Image 1 (cartoon, rainbow over the protein chains, first blue to last red):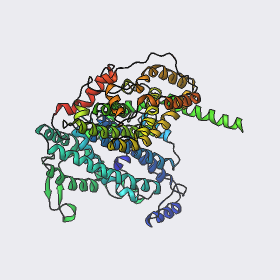
Image 2: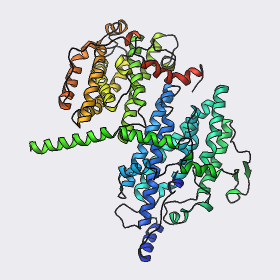
Image 3: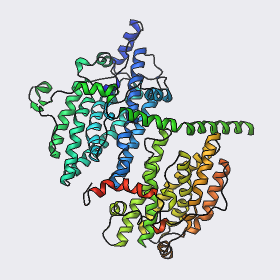
Image 4: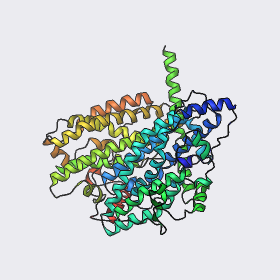
Length: 331
Length: 246
């Protein structure tokens, strides 16, 4: 998720070399940068972009899973899914707060999302078609998010790193919950197992795309690595995810939809790993640029909630102003 | 006896489901967290009551059999909770009306002769006190907010008040449970409900309607048309795979 968080980030910065060197020395000493510390403008801009896009991903991500809350097939699953989607909203809230420490407001970030200026993870532009998608999202999408986010707990920017510690704990719970849904389906009826395989077939490649373009095509990696906003490259994280996930699919008795996938002793510095087939980057960029099945619907749903809720937010402010005025009058 | 528990369980599940429909679509992020929170409380209570009802019934039906494999004529919830969400004013008013009934109900049920009901009541009373606070604050904010919000709030009262009388009615099943000391007498919640609603309405600048004809029928499975659609959606996956484990 966070690799995509850097899409559109502008790390250019215009400070003196002495300032940049002093800042870099703090980063290299693994000191946390706090909101009131001096920082290069490019560092601030990159973080606002990345944290904001990460927050948007959490908020937009509530929609595909929310699509199944009203149809969850048991009360236990219904409660668990509600709690999970609520957690995602909570992650959005911490992340917006972390971004706000850099001088941007939640409303400004929301307007950017609704205007299509800020991105969110491409994965949420795919539709959830069956109950098995809920298991698959937990297992694969949250699994990929964890791979991305664990290193962010050590991000150089303090508020982001601290928010990520809590988020990672919850994501890890979601991932296990998703896998448990898959396990239950795979031990169930033929129809349930078919539903599980179908969901894996549809979510596998988009999950791999969550890590962002190949390193050679990833334009922001170098500066973000130096600033320790990013600690591993897209391909390194993708490989870690694949190596962890393929044996999990085997255990479920499901087949990863990649005929070229094979064990390769040479990967991971000779430790071996699963070499994957070609990723369809045309599809990735198409979805990032707005032509996924659900892009328009996702933004339309967020816009509708925002616009339909305007009178509520206005009323809350009006009431608070009235109360304050009455308090002053009474004093 | 078990039917009296089903009535309250259905109230909680149906209202919890309605609240869950808001998730991801609320007017602000804080409400995207608060609405599912209340939904989770209600669904949790429903699960406990279904399990107990199934046990007392003795036919081997569990919480999911009761929630997913009964049709609208078998659901015993009151009409108030099945009302569609409408706007945020309607949702908050519905929540306040239900909460203001359930809070004294659960406090009284803490003295139930049934151990399980007693346990559920202790937890539910605390949760619903928070629901009243949350919904009550919103009713006040919206009633005493802008011209538009006040009009919407007044409309919500006009639309929902007719469903408030049914809360205090005891069906035959409820009367049996009341006689056995399992559940408190519903009519006894009236004074506290009037007090809470009156207090909130004064601050919100709303008027409690008088002379409203009170709709009823939910406890006999006589619902409005919206419940059937809600159940069709809620039960669709479970019913497409009867006997499956999820």
